[in-house]
Image (tube, rainbow, N blue to C red):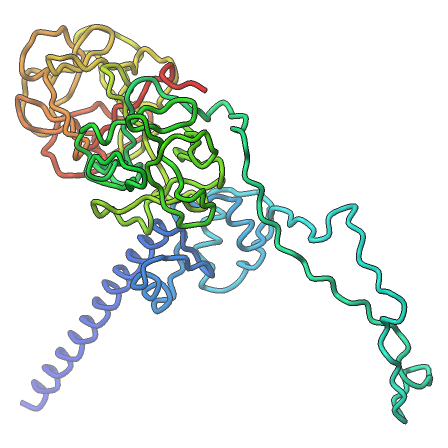
Length: 455
């Protein structure tokens, strides 16, 4: 009997230990997941906690998070930790920098820290002290220096305070690179590049000076359609601007009479997907990644965070169809073949590629090179392939686009156009239909053709 009790006690203790171990790893994974979310949302990384939510800021500190943003660049790592090829810099030791080191290695980084500008620019002559401005020598007995002379006789040069330099606000638009544009043909909807179904919005369709520009559920209504031309993002005859010509982080964005000033001039970078204000050299930003309807937009330092990315959507009937899970990937006709049954896949978005130019007809058809995107055999099962086929006016070739979610829904089955996997490797998987689940690989964005951009 005594042995049975001992065995039972042992088993109970063992189960308790196993439970504690399981709890530890589940809790640790949960914390790591939350840390990663905060990293991605605010561009947080070790020694750099810029979360704007008090709760997230405290969580990061209390749990000693060590994650880095998924979008962090090699140059950011170099500048933050002094890293360069063959040298981890400040991050060379310590568990808190383990993720920093592994990220550096996985990206095969070889950048060096950005040189810091001198506080005494070339040609700036230091202030020379006037006669008599030297300190009075010390004459106290015994205060001798190493050579035995009494007192200190070296004059002290006063330190000239450095006056902060306020950056000059440009008075004219800058020269744009090959990936930067200041105009898009036709009406444009600016979708958040971070959260499907959220768009730039003129609050309550207001037209008065000072009407806020906010984030809101996409609904394709007129107050989410802008004319973007010559650097001005216009709603009616008014311009989107930074309030009071602000240039500081957090300066609000609003609607105002067009004045021609640079606080109303914006350019779009197709490589970074930033909308950048010229006066401040800062990016249009969803503050704190808070996508609550009505949250006013602001400007912030361009730090590569996803809440600063925007994806213009055309209201025209010809476009490229990008996937929200990776906005650099577009629906593509494999090898440009137009035979019935030709493969519809995902591929790098390419300018002027006719295999990616889609027409959305008034009959709800998606056409490439004159043929329709077709659910094979009229199937309704999950993973039924989508292919190219002669247009025949059947429901398996008709698609409803939901602006709120970005879903392209088959009229026949009610299922979503879907990227299998999701696998974003060029040509890896043919597109299918699948139960709509709210995943980003089932969200799609009609983006303007390259010919629609101009400068």
